[in-house]
Length: 396
Image (cartoon, rainbow, N blue to C red):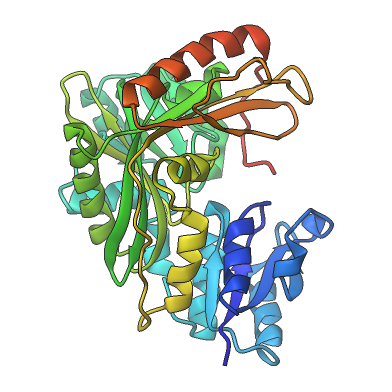
């Protein structure tokens, strides 16, 4: 009997996951938002669509899932985006479908839970305090100098993060938040270089991991309107090996049994590496394509195979190649930017997205990739670059 996969994607993504499930002979059901009903999903890979409304109560979602379970035997429930992780965990527990439950899922969604879990596991992270007890906040701010970052506990990436320069500014901000202030965590701003490790986990162990370095920290790109750059680090790179080792500690202590993960770290001026955040999903901003350009491994497709294999099946990672790859990506003034003047043979992908200009390059020569990306950033500012205010919440 074929495996039935209920994929949850309330943002438009995950085509290769859905297609791979179909290639593997699965029955594929997609739960998405009503307003995405007419989006360009890979409909040839999806057997049936089901819909939720933004703001729909958990009780109504559970009732809908129970109604679906009357006629469908759900073998897997998979969240394709950060914002769906908690819904998927709730439905797994309610319907008793194998996979990550709500307690484990919180560690991959709630920034305060991430910090607390890392501290208990003795994984270094920036100094932080829960925005709960006011006396505790005052004590913390008296000994931890600003600037500080006030982060929404349940958002993704740099969305909604505020930089706070003083105690007076902090209390004004918290007063304005009112009853919502407990939805935030406060941490010290640590300047430095930001890195990410993208992983696949099967059978409670990491079976694939690639470390990469952002050109500019994502927070700066989001808030200052810069150009997004990231590039993979060589397996021979000492820093890359260190990041992969710390990433293993994070995922082991957080309890990811199977799936994909995108985890971020920062290296301070003294060389110390601290954990920033993790997730139970693939990275955004075309990082999947960069990883594939470097290794030949498509994280969406392999994640699908891992989910289908489940707790008792066998999963075999395809042999990765070892190239260096990177991306330069910018908002563009033009609706359809023309990148034909960029003709280096290392270009493997041209990003096709309205009002975006982007190129992915790959080469056996890590220095060549770094040099190309640096030159493209300069040219992109002149040829394409536009900026927009950072969103306060996620947008499609």
